[in-house]
Amino acid sequence: MMCKVAVTLDRKSLVGLDRMVEEGRFPNRSRAIQSAVDLLAERETRTRLSRELAKLDPEEEKQLAEEGLTDAWPEY
Image (cartoon, rainbow, N blue to C red; front, side, top):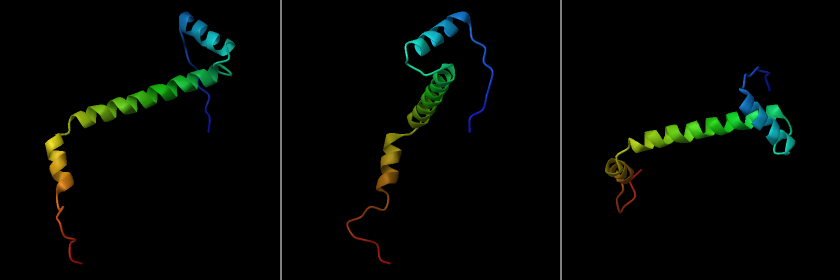
């Protein structure tokens, strides 16, 4: 579901936005802004994931991954 919102942009940003629409890169201002918001959200997600991954200790993760690995199948 799409929702309408009001945005305030400085003149320079608005001129750039209109240029992209005029060049056909986006069908209208709304689509261009939606694309920018989507890209920002995606980048934030990747950045957050990178920060969390940096906290992991590779040796500890390797030990956890190899836990329980043996040459024989467990008995059921």
